[in-house]
Image (cartoon, rainbow, N blue to C red):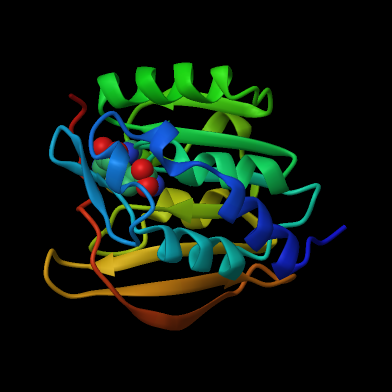
Length: 193
Ligand code: SAH
C-alpha cells in the first residue's frame, strides 16, 4: 500500500518538532534548521517533508536512514514504513534519539551507532535509503545495500555546493540518478565520536 501525499503531510503537520529539540523549543515551528549540539543541525521541516515524499514510501518498505540526529525525520519514516534502521555516528545523539523515539511509542525503529558510509549490512537490502548528511559521492555500500526497485535520497557535494539526488535501482540492478535541487547539509563524517 502506498500512502498519499495528503496523509504524509497531515502527520507531518501534527508532529511536534519541539519534542525533538532540547533548545530553541519556542522557535520549533519556524521553517529553519536549528543546532542540536555536536556541530549538527535539525533540518528545516519543509525539506524533511519534501525528501520524505521523494522517497515514495510504501507501507511494507524497509528503510535505512543515515544520520539519525534529532530523530525527527526518523519518526516520519517510521510512521509510513514497516521498519526503519537508522545509523548515527555521534554516540550522544544516537542515545538521545533512541530514548526519545521509544518514549514517542515507536516500536519499528532499530538504532545503530556507527559510520553510515557503511550502511547497516546486517539488515540489507533496503527498499528505501534516506541520507541526511552530505557525502562527496554516493557511498558504494549504500548502492550495494539498496534493493532492486529501491530508491535512495541523498545530498552529494562539498560543504558549500550540494545536489540532492534521487538514486533508483531498477529490476536489472541498473542505477539511475536524477537531480532534485540544491541543498545544504552538514557533511557525512568518517570517524565516530
Ligand atoms: N535528519 C536529522 C539529522 C540531520 S544532521 C535531523 O533532522 O535531525 C546529520 C546527522 O548525520 C547528524 O546527526 C550527524 O551526526 C550524522 N552523521 C554525520 N556523519 C555521519 C556518518 N558517517 N554516519 C552516520 N551519521 C552521520
